[in-house]
Length: 282
Image 1: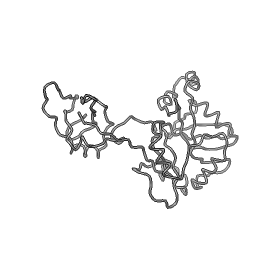
Image 2: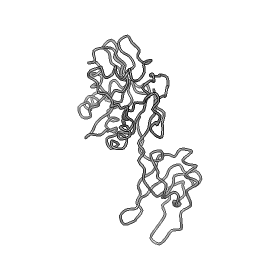
Image 3: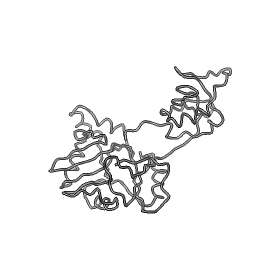
Image 4: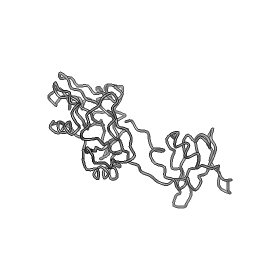
């Protein structure tokens, strides 16, 4: 099952909701059958050889089981996705060394099967109770208080919490692309000046952003992700050609693009994660 993006936490209490932190890691299905453990990514790629410590932990559960969760690496109290990516080393010897240098954890948020029993048709609340009865697992925190979920989003983004995933307590686990879960990302906004674009005035592909330093000099702050078609259309209506250069100032220009200044509407516009930010693996 995957989560569909949503802009805000649900307001309706009908049916009941549960919320879990969304960590920046690798989605992983863990299968234990007849004493053999396999780890599989969301793209059906085998992760078994890269995370032997997780294989050992699942093997110790003592019975056949299918789990759904997130693989993460922790570094000084926060999720380190770069360390997690380095765990996917092609050398078996190096992969074993990284178990010690960059240990991973498997944070479980759902259960699909127990010995001889497919539990996907049971409601989420019942599946969560089954998880909590198992020993030896690291469970994803869960709350039914959406005010607590909002606190997670606001206060724990520094630890690698990207947002929250919200699930109805009555929903079953739907395979084959079922999407009854909601994914609400933390949206941190701030003001910036659009100093240039990649593309053209009518079709900006990405923005180059700047901010004023304490001496009120414009400094490069970064570049956005490739813009969505909707964002391109909205921003194209706000951008205007660069003003003529003043003494001591030279507008920058990128290959294959024009140089622009921000209109007053653009300067006041906050650019959030939909437009800018790092790329994520999961």
